[in-house]
Image (cartoon, rainbow, N blue to C red; front, side, top):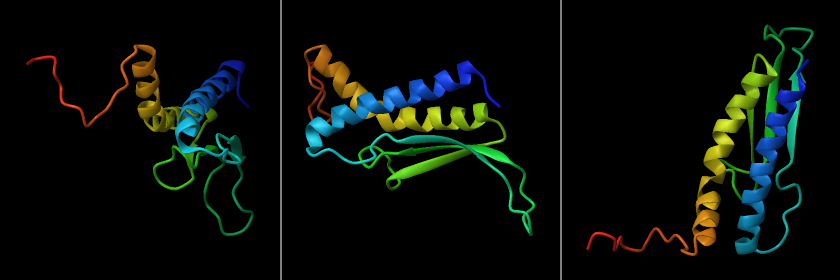
Length: 120
């Protein structure tokens, strides 16, 4: 099926999603049920009329961070392939929140609307 390192990759994705979600929830207010839920699934083709091969998918739910609705699913021939696709997408989902957290850590909130005063 899949090994411990593959499972750890999925755990790290959810931890990244968790941190970005908590950051966004501080700004957006009430708790969202199911935020950050994830699944790793093995899909078997239908018995009749389906010519697809078995595959794996990673599903993630994030009302706060998913840009195309509330959830997304990534497919692959192996769990590693599906997880790689999820890693790439969730990195993009979390980027804004992570940069805000970094700015707060550095003591300078990041505001895209502010002018750059470093050269002038």
